[in-house]
Length: 270
Image (cartoon, rainbow, N blue to C red; front, side, top):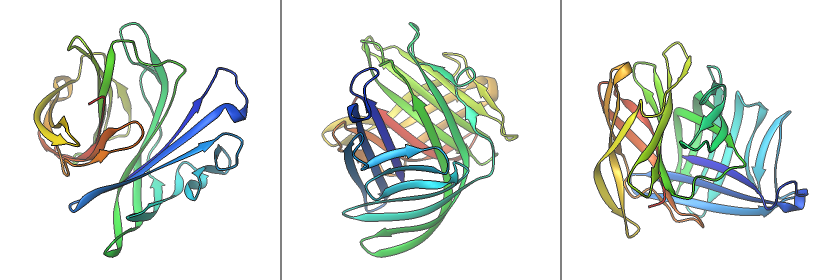
């Protein structure tokens, strides 16, 4: 499943009414990928976030709890509903250098942290009825005042849980000249985050799928030689296309090779 809330300032230093909110929710299944999208304007009480007790919401979609370590997550669309409990059993991980994640050779960057240690229980309801589920979840929180460079065309991002207890977040920002800026974070089985140097991780598209009239890479070869990682990441459901206002691909993957496991893949700009 996916739950995402975006907030965009319409102008620097603007009032609350100069905030635009957008949210996406999705469920990927063997029978199909279902998604929904919501919009709101700032200061309308239709969407918002508060820190203590934590709440992020838009309409009836909600991520809320005492704090980010203990959350209830709800969302619904025309063909799905989910109500999930997220309990963290590890620390937050700062991405990049102390939470400052650089995106290009010219210095575009964001502030970025993750909580990759959630255990999940709850219910997903589809057209055939409710299904009790358990699993893992990964939260990313990222904010920036800088767009990508003028020549960067999109990104390919993975978050992976390995059976060994280790984890990997990695992404490549594609440039129109065919090159890519690739960075990430290695997370040890002892739950320590280690930022990767640009180029230390490689991601190579190996197989493509025709999705929504686009040719999208849905199988990736991923290598991190310094940690003995040589893996293949394959989409479980290649049709996991988000036909939202800004369209992109996002869905679950299975991982094979030196570090088998599960994870999630997001790709934009295709």
